[in-house]
Length: 544
Ligand code: FAE
Image (cartoon, rainbow, N blue to C red):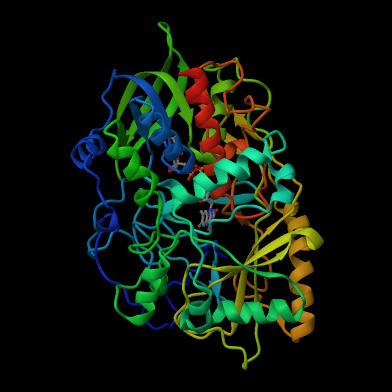
């Protein structure tokens, strides 16, 4: 998993040895520049009712952070609106983020019971009751799929595995067919990788690190079946992880932290694009503020209705502001839901018929394999995956060798596969519920399962091993109920022009994963970031 799935095996009912964890602030590692005072002021002032704003950015994930930084650098004042929390204040245990092994109120977005991607372990259900709170991980249920998303300032970067993968150039034409690959690979992928702080594990350290025994077992099995095995870059601070392993720094990746945030080590957007944006003095962020409507304003620009939320999800205030330009960066699902509703309810009738279409799951499927007793995967496992099996060209699957950081020896190998699943779904407005439906069906995962089997059936046959059946229910092999990688819904060149300008609505832009038509062949956030860098550069040059 893992992208992180990190198999968060909870404590309830399951015996496991404790993970070590330290205390402190994730922001402690952020080097503030000389603009720190302005940045802090900007960071803490929530948007006022009635405000007039040059540029409003809905959401603080990858697309939103890139847009805010580049607009501010170009001299534009930016207001970012984020429905989740700021995640800058320690909780009762002195830490900002909860551990995957002991989910609490901080872990899930407005749920009263956890909904962990791995629902079972050794046949036992591992979900547990938690207080309803605006927690960090949203398991958003649609009829045929649960979509996991980060909630808070930093979006998905708060909860993801940090796997930062640039797709192979030969695959790019199928990912974003209307985008110039030369520009992307010459300029925008390098810019995104630099901005995100992407690096690759020291291969010598990998060979000896106790916490990557599971990945070395994964490599051995992949190579014995003649599959290409590749290191996968990440935004984790590898030097910090070395110190975790050496016992000289508080543990984060080695304490199983991931799905509910990393207290140290991971360079989320809170440590990269966002502090740079705030340091310009031109970017303000309003956490616990949710955009619910955008409509043309009579005097020009757009009227944006925003609900301020309490930590139990209640609306405590409603604000109406006017923005000259609005950047939809609420993530594939958030942006698609907003635009679908705004078109259907007549708030933005000029949006075209492509809104809500072209949504895919990046082909995500999960599975585990049961190894022989002579192939232990280790009781100490880094929650940050660092390698994958590349069978994209031959079988349509790229499988991350993922951790199962339970703290005990499981003899299990665990994988999140990204597959060439061609199925695409559509968001529609449901007038009777007032909500948005997605017509994805669970059976549509089958092409993804078939692609993943091109890898794991072969490895099992070679090793004489079997699939695990205890991780996703009772006797269930495939994790086919979820995705971590929602993509599409306002696709580039269809719902928008070739730079994210929404057709029919001058001054409205999409700048997040909604632009990408359903699949990136690898983990998506580097592509989302690079595309945002490309689009905002054009928009600043041509529109502002
Ligand atoms: P995103 O980061 O989701 O940000 C959207 C933001 O908008 C969120 O903070 C929302 O709370 C906010 N929002 C939504 N609606 C509203 C509204 N109405 N008003 C105000 N705010 C709103 O969007 N990808 C990788 O490349 N590598 C990985 O290792 C990886 N692991 C993952 C593991 C997990 C568990 C999950 C859930 C995802 C993972 N991903 C990974 C996916 C990656 O995080 C995701 O593609 C990006 O975060 C999407 O970026 P966007 O900018 O599109």
